[in-house]
Length: 191
View 1 (cartoon, helix red, strand yellow):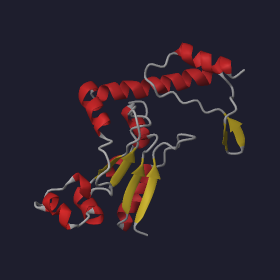
View 2 (cartoon, helix red, strand yellow):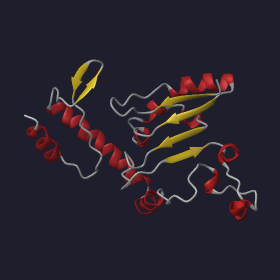
View 3 (spheres, rainbow, N blue to C red):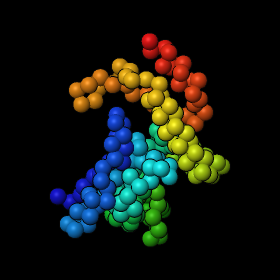
View 4 (cartoon, rainbow, N blue to C red):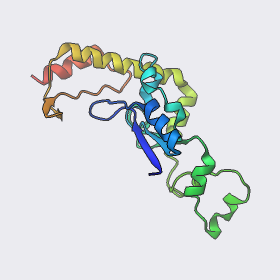
């Protein structure tokens, strides 16, 4: 084995692995620790949840999907590396037409994933973070947690998904402008 993956917030149940424990084993054995925070990684922005993400700081790489809980308008992925030079060693593509981007020892974004001519999908997220700041994202995540708690208090079960052999409800409140009235409207429509 050369790597291990810990998940921080599964899509259906929000399960967060013991990243600190997994990371400790990975370090002992010299394995790469990757953290899959695609869906729930943004939860670490909420102070009340941050402790559940203990150990994520030891990850060699982490991925998050900004089109999920980071409120980006369309699909993109944020893949962060502890040591980008290792990623470059794996992902760098050599071709004569790419020589100009490899003239210096600097890391070019094209060295960090296989995307080359695809559009820069991360720009909307970057612009939004630059304009609104990380605090706006933290507040939005906190708001979605409050909406989830409110909805849970309003219903016992809503049939739309399955979990451990049971039919359960899965209501997802990501938009920071969601109100309790909107939650009530959704719940009323389920009757």
